Image (cartoon, rainbow, N blue to C red; front, side):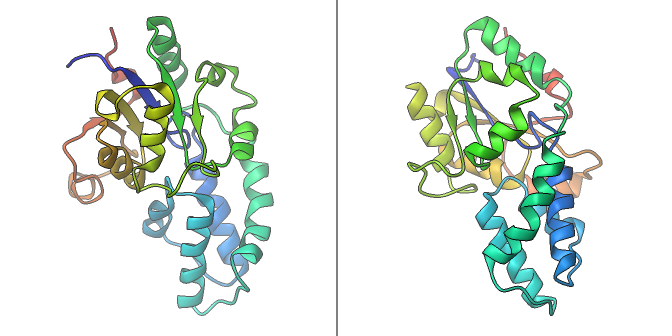
Length: 221
C-alpha cells in the first residue's frame, strides 16, 4: 500500500476514549426525561454532531412516552454531565504513538471531528501531543455544511491540507464516521469496538475497509 498524502483523524473513540463517557451522558440525560436508551441506540449516536444526536434522542424520548420541551432543554441537562466526564477522558491505546509517528515522518495530519471547537479544547487540554495535529475541522465549523455520515468533514479537512481525499488515510471508529470518510473517497481505517461479532461488524461496517483491533497495528514507514 502506498503511503498516505495525509492522515485524517476522528477524535472521540479514536484518539481519546470518550465514547463511553458520551454514552453515559446521553443515557443519564434521557433518563431524566423518563426514557432508557439501549446499547444499539447509543451506538447509533457515535460519531455524529451534538445537535444531530440531540434530535435523535429527542425522537426516542417522544417515542418512549417521555416529555421534553426540545433540543435546548435536553442539552441543558446533558451538557453539564458531559463536560464533567469528558475533561477526564484518557487516550486510546496507541493514539499518541501514531500521531507522533506521523509527525516524525512528516505526514500531514488533520482532525476531522463532530465535536465543537470548545468541546475539543476541553478534551484535548490534558493531552498536549494532540497539538501536533495543527489542522482541524470541527462540528461547528462555519464552512461545514453537513455532519457525518455526510462526507463534508473529510472533504474539508483534505482541502485545508491541500491534498486529494483519495490520497488520504482516514481513521474512524463509528459507523457514521466510516461512511463519511468512505463517501469522501478516503482509504478508511476502522478501529473496531471491542467485543463486536462478525455479523455485527458486517452490518455496521459494510465497506471494503481496513479493520483494526488496535492503533498499534497501523503500518507507517
